[in-house]
Length: 534
Ligand SMILES: Nc1ncnc2c1ncn2[C@@H]1O[C@H](COP(=O)(O)OP(=O)(O)OP(=O)(O)O)[C@@H](O)[C@H]1O
Image 1 (tube, rainbow, N blue to C red):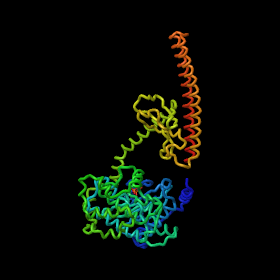
Image 2: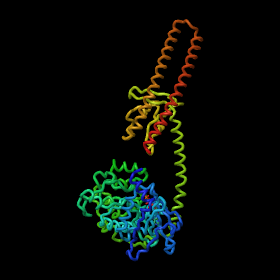
Image 3: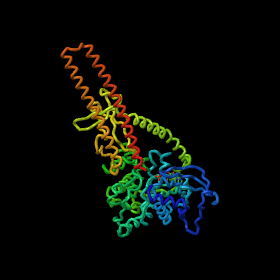
Image 4: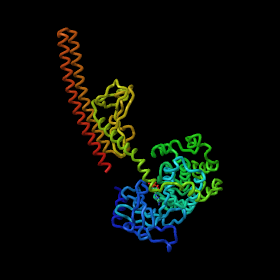
């Protein structure tokens, strides 16, 4: 466990982590929300994030005012105590009608409770998922985007980056008001530059952050390539992706797992036209020229060419933009409550989660099965040594091989397959000191055990080859003897059968020993790996 995290937990346990955020009213008029969990009554679960659960609750001493409580699991949160304190500090300095502040926050066991105003319509992401899977109508998108641009203009003027702009972090209330929430990974340009000795000016493009933060699909290319640094314009990129998310119901590349989407962005550089091409041709004329232009300008690869938030507000796209009433009429009417939507979403997620668990069990069984090796094949061409599995038949179309893979940080043997031309000739990382490049550095311990296992396998193989050489020698003698005509054909076959049975018995014994050895080595590898991981 990281030292900073340990210190954080100690401070949390000693009750040191008690903070109070202001809401967006004047300090003197601001109601003081109690810092005691017994003053709140949880009514329903309304959302889950990566490390937090969000509840609808009432605050009993405050006339049973309805609130939302985000309970952040401090053991699972990416942020440590200092990050959380920094977030609280940033939030306490911000005051804008389009930014969701918290009433207060305090710790309950190992959770940080952030008490916020309850935004009864929930996030735009949950609204889209439940009622607008193909996206919101363009006039509604305009209202939402304009409100977010107001928040961004304010935020950037203060020198802050949100760094996680997405529909999941835009909340809506029953009166149609739209607020930007979740400042968990936000950053201050001033802090970044003061530590790097860069002159401070919010409009300067030399204000650079380097840490990768945010959610992959919405991340600007320069955030992914953060060695060159990035600035306020990273939020403008994410804003452009959010516009696409609101328009199509999902962000671009969301059919790929997040890590793959990152890779694609690195290798292929994403352009707006790429996304347009992916869309159904029916959708081509669905959006206005103004909207397309606005989004395209936000998704310029070159950050300096992306307009700033206040310039975007002057874009013709917002010229005839309606008020929040449009959202009430078009989006909120007939919308199930945030708690109903959450329950429904949970039910829909259940079968796929169950299937994933079943799949994992199957994979695990397969992995255990494939840990048994019945022999080795030496591939001369590539000077490679490969394992052969029990029951494997070279006449079969496909044949299993093992390869060393990293699975959630754990090293396992995985079943693979090759076509018949390569049958029984799969390349195992066990045979190669460098493996297939997937084993990263800093794993000296695991590598040492791997080397031992390779040596063990080689010694056993040498023994087996010696035996086989002797057996082949005897066979040659036998056949040569046949030429001499000293034994009858029956006798010769009888002898041969006896010999082969003995050979087979020996081979079985050796294989059993080899299997045991390998199983033992496998255990050693996982034990070494677990110790390393711990
Ligand atoms: N103040 C609030 N009022 C009403 N609903 C809320 C409030 N805050 C969060 N929610 C609901 O809870 C859900 C989860 O919120 P949360 O901020 O934990 O997760 P997220 O932003 O979707 O995910 P993550 O931040 O972990 O990527 C939201 O999608 C929203 O529907």
